[in-house]
Every structure is written in structure tokens, then in C-alpha cells.
Length: 155
Image (cartoon, rainbow, N blue to C red; front, side, top):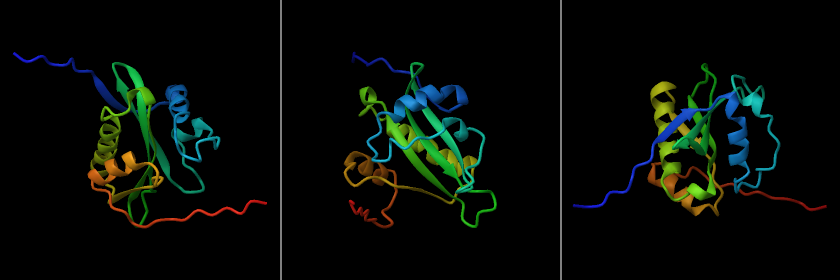
């Protein structure tokens, strides 16, 4: 007889305005250099960003009822020539990293984009130092499109 580890209930769901506190908490663990840019969270629910004409869906990862991660999917307008989504702000709480939750939420996001939204492709950016994320994205089939250089002139 083999010992089996207890399984934990994993749920991936679309966030609601009541989840803003969880989203803000997860965002505090982001390694992105842009993590301190203020966002008015209430604008992410049911609204369209007029600068990009994209709607954002936030997927939350819950384990045993605790929100432990998230991913955001930006959706192009319905009349877009190419229906390409954009994944951003994939964050797993540090206490829950290395357990496959990032893979789970990205796979869910891909399936939702393909099956529900009929997207033709999904793009994302990742910082070149984030090797574990790069490995995950490549394992899921994402392919490098180009590299960007970021410059600053200190005054």
C-alpha cells in the first residue's frame, strides 16, 4: 500500500469587485519593476480602458478557499482585425510558489481565451531575469517574438 498525499481543492475563477483586497495583496509580491504604478482597481471590473480599448479579466487561483495567485487577460475589442489577447500580472503568493499554480492559471487562461473568447493568439511580456516564468511559458508553447531594450537617461 502506498501513502498518498492529501489533495487540495484548487479553483480558478473570475475575480469580482469584492476580490480587490486579494488582488492588491498579490500585486504587492510582484517582481515587476512597474509594480508600484498605481492602478484604480475598480476600473478593471466591467469597464473598458479607453487608451487600449481592451477589457481585462482577472483570474484568481484559490486553494482550500484561500486566494493564492492570479493572472490577468486583456481582451481585444470584438471588431479587432486580429483577436490577440495579452496576459499580464501573473503572480503567485511566495508561500505557494513551486506547486504548479502558475501553470494551472495560465493553462486556464489559454483555454478560456481559445474556447470562450475565440482568440487567435495570446501575447505576454516577461522580464529576462524571470527564468522560471520563461521556462513555464516556453513549456506551454509560447515562442519568443522579439527582445526589447529599455533605456534611461538619468538627469
